[in-house]
Image (cartoon, rainbow, N blue to C red; front, side, top):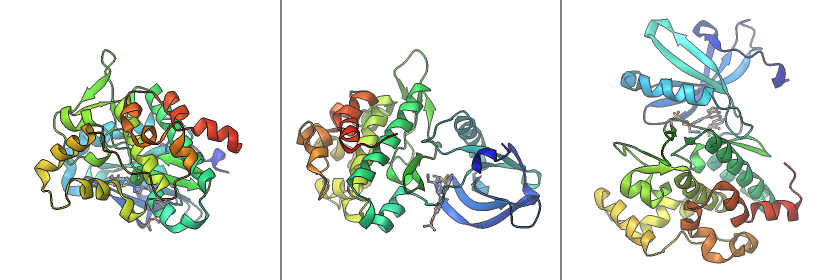
Length: 305
Ligand SMILES: CCS(=O)(=O)N1CC(CC#N)(n2cc(-c3nc(Nc4ccc(C(=O)OC(C)(C)C)cc4)nc4[nH]ccc34)cn2)C1
């Protein structure tokens, strides 16, 4: 059983068998591999994150990401397994547990018909608890989005991808980044867009957007980016998009309630609060849990954790 999985921390490249690509990002990519020291295909399946070869400049960032994920021990966060040094290329890879069902987006698109309200709330409360754990460690994830939530089983999802995660300094409430880079502004809280400030509250804002994605079954035409762009004018060009986005947010425009979203989740406590992410951005996870009625629904629905 997985619990007897020997806690490998060092993986030898010569026993790594590449199987298929799992995901790709700006600087890295994740591959499905089998670690097969016996050479008889009985080895474990693992997810291996490598830096894009020509992006060695991000080695320092990559090492920070490895240190981050290595320090996290939570059922709702993807598990670190170890590292693999490939001396030839003087580079290293991050070895993580392989989550067989892939990203939440693909899972909901494929399994839309039998993922009901009850399971949505279970997934939402698990992401919430993963975020609560991150906050207890003074981490801000900074890239919370359905694309970065992985599905371990039909009843378990986990937060993944700690490439942008930062630790909030002990004497401050937020982390300010120097250069926003290619930022996913449609998941960003207003203060992250205008002042590059990231905090537990801005992660809670992004969690609000993830809830919208979740209750929209990650449907393509309910994608937050698409809905925001429709509102600000889809022919808007890059530099002024964030300015228009801030404008509509300041005028209290919010993502529309997803179609068929259960009234209890929207009406509890009242329509605007669920999608009016401002309260989300000024409350902590516990308040959010009660705000969105997750705990309330858990009891009502008898979802046991
Ligand atoms: C951002 C830079 S990034 O490159 O570092 N990168 C992208 C990232 C986004 C996030 N999160 N990512 C993580 C995984 C991942 N996937 C998995 N399992 C699966 C299982 C099945 C499938 C699948 O069916 O896929 C197809 C394409 C539909 C066939 C996909 C993934 N297990 C994992 N364990 C640890 C990580 C990890 C994939 N993409 C992080």
